[in-house]
Amino acid sequence: MIIGCSSNPYRTSYHIAEYLINAGFEVIPVNPNETEVLGITCYPSLDDIPDEKDIDLIDIFRNKKYSVETVQEIIDWSKKTGQKPVIWTQLDVSTDEAKDLAMSNGLEYVENRCLMVEHRL
Image (cartoon, rainbow, N blue to C red; front, side, top):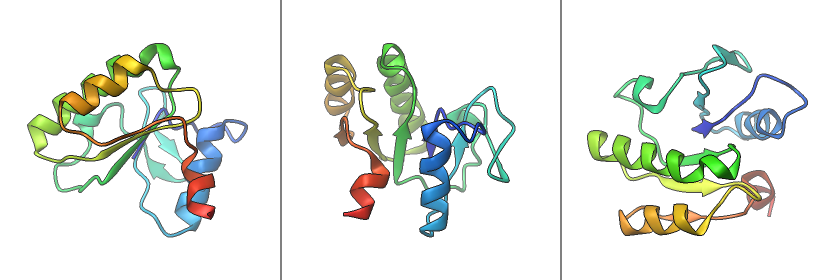
């Protein structure tokens, strides 16, 4: 799942989503301003994703001023669904407060790393 995924081909989130899809991963875009990204239904929020979807990792592409809010949304969704995804923050998206919040709620947290670059290694 990619929070902040954009249909704009000039945005990094678009390229990362495209890369992951081409690498065989299922990508679930989440963005209240989009209806579709790369031909895939885009959900306005975590709560709108169908319950039968298993989420292993949530990649955050939002301005870091929203990182605590986004992590709290993930925590609330996690408690509701029982799922414990890894929270992955792209370069310059993480804050210490967001990391502490995630970890204090038992969620693995990866900070300031590009998922595409890490996968290519």
